[in-house]
Length: 151
Image (cartoon, rainbow, N blue to C red):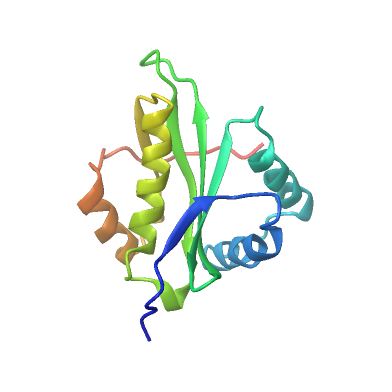
């Protein structure tokens, strides 16, 4: 059923933890990872700390939080402007393909534009075909391949 109430997107606030946490856990389940509780609590505190460059937003449908986005500003060596990295994006399965993901990306983009970042970029897993279809409509695919050494 499609909600007749308007979709609300807003920055995460201090009273949103109980709505944010199930989405954060859903994101972890989707990617089959377990993020330690201390990292989860630290992420939450960073999102709320105005001295940090970690931000978050929730998408709401009829008073229920149904999606989240987290983004981080950081320096780079190719420009004088900060980059904006869309670190996490998740929408509940029941709300996918209803523009929530796109709207959350646009929310982060608006934040990056307001703060004069040089670019917004993100990664996704190569098997996330539905997300890739959305991303290809919104952004350029750079062709870079991700490599990591976990420390």
